[in-house]
Image (cartoon, rainbow, N blue to C red; front, side):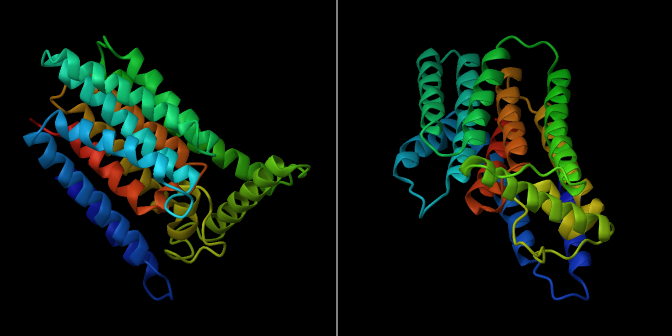
Length: 300
């Protein structure tokens, strides 16, 4: 019920921010529908096939990733999918180990390592680091005692990532944008410029933003800043509440704690990546996020 009410609030606020304007809320509304569909599918599949429903999508992503060129998914989006698949593989491995399926658990470890290695072949440094972070989290929670404390720590990590983006955007607003002296620096300066523009729009329109889909630069290269620019600070608060609810939902899951924290680590890594890249604008990533959350929160 809490998730349903939160989803309804996000949709209602999107419509409210678009009212009386030539806005384009259909993209946000379709994204909400996609994540809801993925979550429902994950809950059903995870209840019927507790282990296979986790490992089959992870293996499918491992097979699909080498064939996905720039015309299918860009590097950041592909790395985000790989990170979600790593979380699913680790979650499935811990679930299999809890049921005494040792060979299945070992196969899941190999799938996770393969996915992490494939992330190194993308041109997304942040995405590769996110996949590595998921592996680190999954490997360090094999004997956890306090699930809620670990979930709280993951939530704080995501909050720090968003806070760092806001601080950098505010610093560039104050004239702290570094000079571009090379290709890598040029990309950083361009991203900071987008963040600066998004923060300026949020400060000028703090309540309703400029309207869904009406950010002047198209993409702010940051999900939190784009949400704040298009739907104001209340829209950003709703986005944060959705992330907190996802961790809370995982905290109530009957799955083994290591499996739950592996899925939570993947969602946290995606949140950190979404803070600095526009990966949440890709439908496949949105559906995959809902699917992993549903699989991790499923009651077999």
